[in-house]
Length: 256
Length: 182
Image (cartoon, rainbow over all chains, first blue to last red; front, side, top):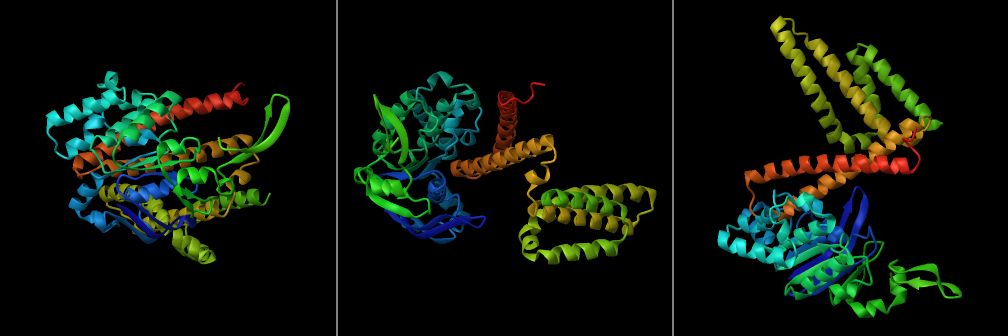
């Protein structure tokens, strides 16, 4: 479904991604791991066709996605109704007058039947526990509710590839559990970025680990990575700090 | 100290530029500035031009309109003020890129805090605007004229509420750290 070949990206003279190569199959659930600033968000934005690589190529279902591709309105329509992205800050994604309109926004662009739109919106509002805010302006919701609304809004169009940038960042533990359950039930391809090691196994089976030097350090099964302390130290995903067990005061690596 | 001297030289130069009335002088200074860091001016060309045009089109057009009705258009004067503004704009960009501004303003705590707060707010807004544009592009399946209107409304709304929220949070944070308590 997704293929990235020898992709590099820089901004203002700084390297953000270096020689990235990966393939993602249909219905795979991939976790993109790495510390802040390693290039996770940039890689997701490239896969969402928002920015384009300086060198290398990104293919979606065999089609080369670059700025020329989006010059054709039909290509844009096809890509944007297949690939969606949840941004780190839900505030930037919500621009409709009511919660209902926010979820309906994508389907209205696709000229879906009003009855179908209503059914889908009601279903999603119910799933995400947002029905009571149906007529409220999105900006009045709490951070966690905005996050759920943004997720409902992008899922409404039944996409094939969902890119989620730190989706748990604004959620309380209860909401995190709900979203994990919901993502688990989705039978679609997901790429989810996080720097939270304890959360990673809940979000997918395969993980791609980006290093601080913006390269892929590991691509494979998630539990093997979690048992590879050397690699986790190299990626700066584990850290040492002092703590106590009753009378014993000692220091060792932690995954939290 | 070096940064403060740069600031003093910059302010003196701006003052000098406002009292000199010679096109040749401005042209010569512009040339010296550009030659002194050609790669910087090549990189910053678009930004400098944009800043210059935004300000000068309004001033020049107002002047032209005003003098047109009085039938005494002075094209030499228009050239002079445009050259003056272009020189000051280039000098300002040059100064800002070659000076550590927080250090230059460190002679005054108030200026220093004000600069740091403003700068961090500007960076914050630039990032938010960029995210907003990308999120909007990501959700637009079929481009329509109304979508531009939606984006503009959202930018205004978000920036207004964000400004209010940030101002409250910043003042609380400053109070928490001992400022604003008289």
